[in-house]
Image (cartoon, rainbow, N blue to C red; front, side):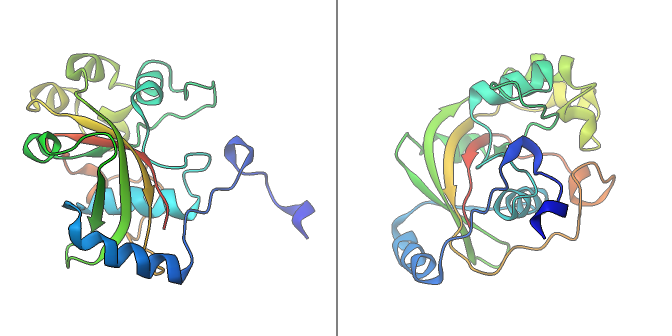
Length: 198
């Protein structure tokens, strides 16, 4: 039966969901972690990362992969990837993050969906992103390059994420190329990037 399946992009179908017992442990531990409430667009990115929809990504892009995607529409390893999948957070929130920090990613109701393990915090080059935006982030999600240029200063943190909730977030979108809805909303002021597990 598997002979009839199309091979996943990048060669590996990524499933980042953790078993229920590990999810329960992560939820207990999260009481001591800083929390980030996901926007509807971020919730969709998390769903696609954890379900394998963004295979071969194992989480939000790190700085090297992000810059490669921004400049050449490829991951640093050469795999075709036109969408910079990153997690924007506010400047204030990013100031409290350092490599090794774990962040609880939560939905609008405060339910913990994922544990984000920070490995790097960085500020993007907004001008370079806006210049490259005609083929990547600025238009692929329904934003104009002028909106990208006018954004306030942001920071991104490279992370590894483990999703703790066994129920998957639901965004109702099948593709990040879908126009309108949460994909067309602007991002918060700072970006976290890294890996995701559910």
